[in-house]
Length: 398
Image 1: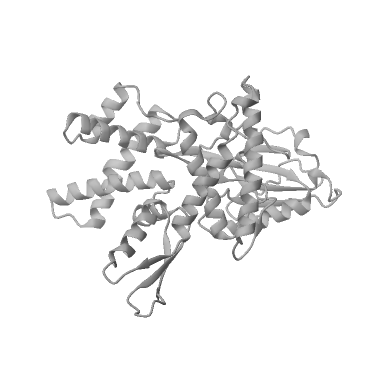
Image 2 (image 1 turned 30 degrees about the vertical axis):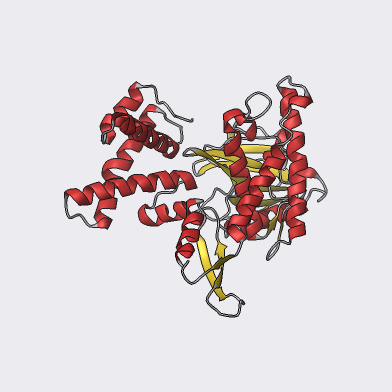
């Protein structure tokens, strides 16, 4: 059996037990598993190991090398992308052949393709969530200097993220990385996206028995409008007068509420003759502000909106604990994790094994909040959880 050149990152299987002498579509292996997947132009297979589930995509070796390098580079940015773990080069195969190379990535847990969100000829009640997630991902990539080149709904996987949706880039073979993107590059990327999305929505309508006149062909334009609004919020300059210094904190707070971490704030004198006004510019990281904060405080890894909801729960229990006793902040956080968070995750996993426990936890938090508001009293977790179970898990999104 021929063995290819494999470049595998530490902490993953060696993948040597797979039959690399054949193309993917000829494989017969007990490791192959069926997983949700979108439409893709290259052969794709999922394989299960003790370390997790991996996606293997075959493509010409030049494209495979390029995609591997792009995805590795994007890992150093706070943009949500799939984690690449390996590059395969079948050196005995013509490099122009589809199966001459392959890229191995970690499967994104609890993710699904966009077609699972389809309702009728469009996206129904999930439409706004999808548009916000997609626009946010594209803004984050462009801020990083990534020109996608083939942006489409199919090149993204989606996950429920508390009351929102998170978009994760999974296809980088057409992408190019630059120190920064010009207005023209961003506009071209948006135009390609709009055309691709229109085609995908026409396919969705046809697949569901609708005439093309009923297809959600404006979806791409709606994404562009949200993209531009978010881009302006993140990149626009603000002129601040001598009695308006509070606007600095407000701007940073607004960006944090959107989930973006602020890396730097530049304040330069405004050239207006008196020097009393300053021009404020901010440099933002990715949409991972709450996720990073939760990870730093507790070690818990969650998506952005999940982290925001969990941080609010942590703050609630911390305030309650410290009001009842003079408990140190660090001790209160540890008590919350050991006595609140982990026990509830275990209960959720016992009832719904295989589901995303973090997402279910945030669904429960929303239920507890609504129930407390309805009854105008503070419900403890046990009472609220029992009520949630008895009511059939209202708000459960998985």
